[in-house]
Length: 119
Image (cartoon, one colour):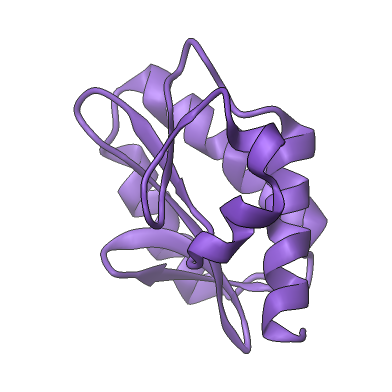
C-alpha cells in the first residue's frame, strides 16, 4: 500500500502542474500503482517515484515533455523495440501529453525493473 506521507507529497507535486500534464502523470501514477500495489510512493530526486526496497521508477514533468525514469538504463536495453518510438537517454524516456506511453509499456518497464532489483 502507498505511504500516506509520500502520497501527499506526490499530490502536492502534481497539483502544481498544468492540467494536461497533471492528468497525464496521474494516469502514469495509477498504472504504476496497480502494477506494484505494495510499493511505497515517495519523492526521490525531486520527482514522484515508487519504492519497493529500492527506488523502482519515477516520473516527472518538464516544460516541453514528460519523463519516465526506470532508474536503470538496462531496462531500455531489454525493451529496445518497445521504447524505440520514444526519445530516450541514459536514464529517461520522454513523452508528451499528445504521445502518451502505452499502459502495457509502463507495466513492462516496472516488471523489468522489479526483476532487476530482485523484488
